[in-house]
Length: 319
Ligand code: PEP
Ligand code: MG
Image (cartoon, rainbow, N blue to C red; front, side):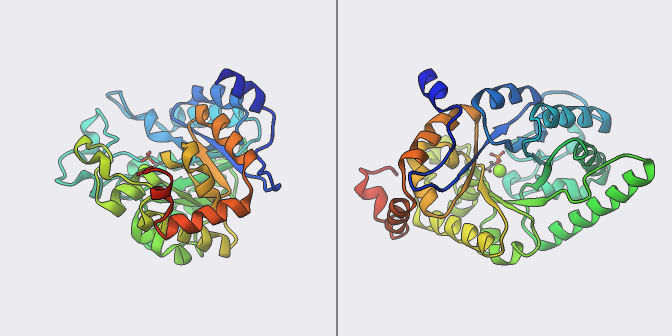
């Protein structure tokens, strides 16, 4: 592994037929950027900002959040940093009772992620202000988790504009053009990707949740683990459709769920049209090695077979 890392570090992620692929990192804490730099990833594709709120009794204020985001942006030295707005609720609980999201009967279908934030402007406003202030220091992209409706995207965009104006009057700098993208992790959003692509600046496919919701399989329940199937033809169709709809409108489409980190799926994902992957930094060397040995034509042939349900069987039962 160490040998692979050293060999791969400075090689570009280019397919055997010359197509450039972006390999970005998923991080949870500002210090994870050390590993990202060691691996030489193409920026941060998912910063799970809720980790700043977890495992503590209180809530970080705007200044503390700003300092954490600023640190990540500065550490990345000009490479893009995709900050996901708070995704608490369901599997990502808080110790603080302030959130009040633990009592729902179906927490994964309840008040989590963006739903929670829009319901709690006293949390969301300082959070977005901290992200906006960090956007003055380098290329920051804001990504919304658990989005299910267009109204949520428009409401968030309006709030971002309002806060940009507020910061301007206070004399704070921020990037007025900061891209606002969405995670595609609700099946109906994937199937309506053509519609969301008209309003979002980018997509990132969150397969951990997308597969959970598409197959009705709790991502954390060991009893149904064997049914959590990334190669299900229905899941692959949603992924393919999301990528195609995003690219048709000219917006970048990434994948930041665990599926993107598994080298056994890399060729398939290239064949489904994916050109941007985000994963835990340690997975990047192996995925890069697969990319460098693959042609897009071969990848597309494999994807065609997988979409028809053929590939997992002929590969010896990957599912
Ligand atoms: C996902 O759902 O695929 C994802 C990347 O987000 P998380 O695992 O943090 O829910
Ligand atoms: Mg998710």
